[in-house]
Image 1 (tube, rainbow, N blue to C red):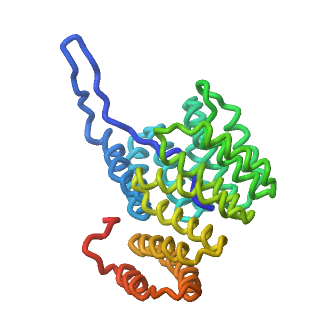
Image 2 (image 1 turned 120 degrees about the vertical axis):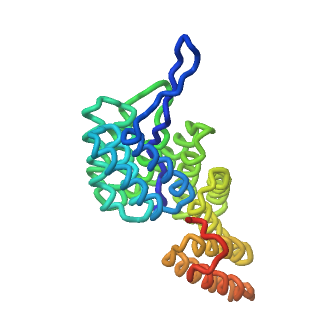
Image 3 (image 1 turned 60 degrees about the vertical axis):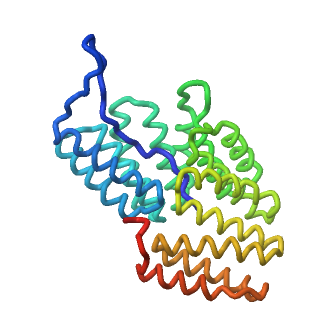
Length: 308
C-alpha cells in the first residue's frame, strides 16, 4: 500500500512585532539546531529520498532530546515514523508514532494528536493489526478542529475498510476524503486519489481507476514527489494492461522504472521491469535502452544523484 503522506511537522524561525518595528528573534544555536536538521531533511522526504531524510530526522530527534524539547522530540519521532512507513517498514514506524502520540497527549495539542493517531493507524493497517488501527483511526475522526473533517484520517479509514473487504464502505470514505481535500495540500490530494484508484484497480474497474491515478500524478508532479510519480505511472500501466492496451502500459512502465532506478529502488525496479518485459513482448516493443539506463543508474552512474 502506498504511504498516505500525513503529518510531517516543520518548525520555522519566529519573528515578533514590537513598537520599534519587526525584529528577528535571536535563537541560540543549541535551541535551533533540531529545527535546522528538520529543514534539511524535508526536501529529501518530499522527493522520496527516504534514507537521506531519515538521517536528518534522527539527528533532529537527538538534538531535541538533548535540550528536553518535548514538542520537538514528538515532531521528530513522528517524522521518523513517517519515513520508515514510506520505506515499507511499518513495524519499525509504530514505536515512533506511539512515542510521539504519548508526548503530544501530554502537551494537549489535539491537532497533533489527531495527526499522529492517523499515522499510527495507517502503520497498523500495513502490519495487519486492524483492531488497533480501527480504534486509533476512529479516535482521530472524532477530533474535530474547525468545520472541515480531516481528510487524511478519512483516507486511512477507507484503506482499513478496503483491507477488511468492505469495498463499498472504502469507496464512500475515499469519495468523502477527496471532497474535503484542501487544494493547497497536493500530498493529501495525491494520497486520497491514489487510494481510490487502487481500490477500483483491485476490483478490475480499470477505466474508472485511471482518472484517479492521473489526478494523483498531477499532484505528485506539482509537489516534486519522485517516488509518488513513479507509483502513479506504475498504476496507470496496470490500468492500461487491464484494458489490454499494452502499448500504453509499456509507455507508463518505461517511465516509472527509470524513476525507481534513479531513486535506487532495486526491488521496485525488478518488479516493474518484469511487467514491462511481458508487455513489451506482447506489443513487439524494444525496451533495451530502458534496461541499459536502469542498469546504469542502479550502479550509481549518473551525472547528478537526485538524492544527493
